[in-house]
Image 1 (tube, rainbow, N blue to C red):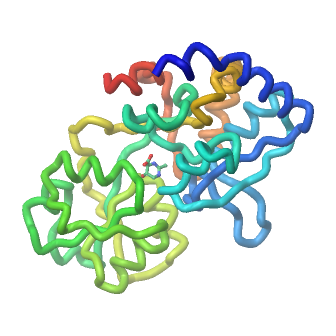
Image 2: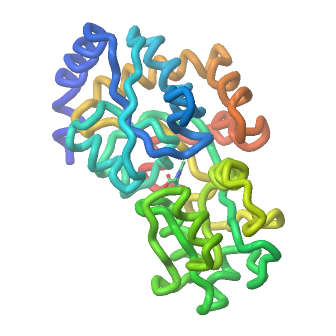
Length: 277
Ligand SMILES: CC1=N[C@H](C(=O)O)[C@@H](O)CN1
């Protein structure tokens, strides 16, 4: 609808002024290393999406980042309801999400992965292998891109078990309630390492599916009314892309490699991604 596009830039600017005045930005995230999480020992907000947002807001004159932990599936409803100002979770820009949140420009790109029981008893190496075996159950985190990806690959909805968070995905496989779990590769590597269990393994020869939405492009996402705030964020983000700050953050972040997480490589824009191009 045209209203939020054209009519609210004034409101967005007021919001920016308010935030600069208060010096605090409230960010919504789901616990998902290495994108955004709260360190269990220090209580600090960590992760590439948090670090990028922190640098961008600092560039905008907002120094204090306050985290609001929520389930992944509640992130967009939460920003719509005004529970926080922005989602900083490395959320993929998708056409249907663009109708419910205002995405800034891409900050990172990422691909997919799978975790199975040790020894890979069902011989699963791709999404297609899940579709080909109706006895296989796959655990997914509520609200994630993986529902759409598996659907595109022909996985039957009856094979899918929905869980609320990443630890739930791995424990579903560990306990045998699910045969496999799908998430971003970086997510699964981090979760696998922290689980430190011999019951499960990463599918090392997983092939990235050649379907719409892969690779994913992750970005900060604002309330639909905060157009001015998003524009200010994009401007500051562009400055930090140009001066190498964003590259430096991704280089320093565990789980992101120079090869596969450079948005400049593809030059995709949010406008294109929201239009499904
Ligand atoms: C960083 C991340 N991206 C995907 C998504 O955007 O739905 C999901 O895999 C959840 N986590």
